[in-house]
Length: 421
Image 1 (cartoon, one colour):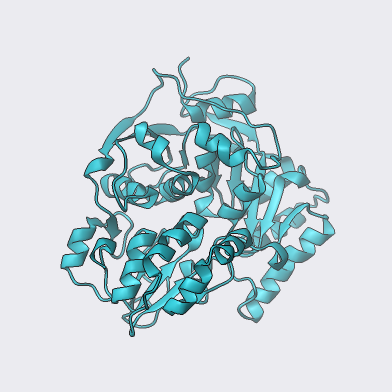
Image 2 (tube, rainbow, N blue to C red):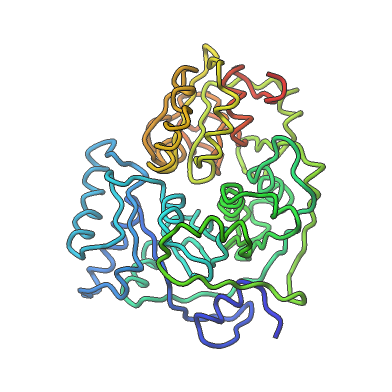
């Protein structure tokens, strides 16, 4: 029976061939929680009467949304996860001592592995599909069921094949590719389906771009995004102490897809998602023509807070200043990225330009803290969502863009083509 990569991963975990549409029970390799969602899972776990985790080494808690605590409520919420982690002597508990945004930190630590089945109580858990794993977000009570049993129920998703062709041009990154996919599909065009990213373009994308690509699969409604393992993946993994043996799966040539999308990336210009949906994508040239002033620029998040994003921003900001009426916030995704940015002189560039360089956190992305927008303010952001009220006041507006466009816009105070600087 011809199968997609996702069907093969589930088949491997179930012990028999499965096909799209089946309801299956699969064991889970890694369960991911964070400081916001884990307390709900903990309560459900403890209410069940269960005393021991089914797979303690397959559970990671990453304190990344409101940490260091922004207020008393977040401090008390974080305490629930800390107490649980210490009680169960969790091996994979990441607090201030080893900070990072969960979807950047866990691949860095080798805790997500090709061929895995991964779930997390965060919708952007689909990020890890960039490593050839099935990875998806679930609710907090679904997470508790996995903590109790070591597995969970899934409907094997049908697949949409996205074929990217051509070498990306100047300023075209993984962020632009996924914004174009979402523009074409809409926010529910891939509802409960796999977005399988293929084509010769993939060979031109480093892992940072691939993580961005899979990260936003959920913004088209997809259950998971996935990219098959290749030499670039293997190079990324070679210095990692992997939690498990990697398993490489590849879709059969005659596998079944409900739809195939072809995108010639050589014809793309950077994509800007206008308020207030990620699917509201327009070419950068349109945004430049619209002369959109910005109060705040944010570079960071699980989508674009990686080292390559900081390098891109650094090249643009070197020897330049942030516009007088514009604020620039830059958030590295992990402490390791932060340290490397310091070693490369990027942090000095950012601060001399007038930016705020923060600790690793999800904070500003979800309007949590350190970057909340006020009434009628406009932000251009490298994050994944621009819903009404996402980053602050409901009257504020968010434009989504890649790191180069965001950095250039900080210099001019309006949405700008970096080539115009």
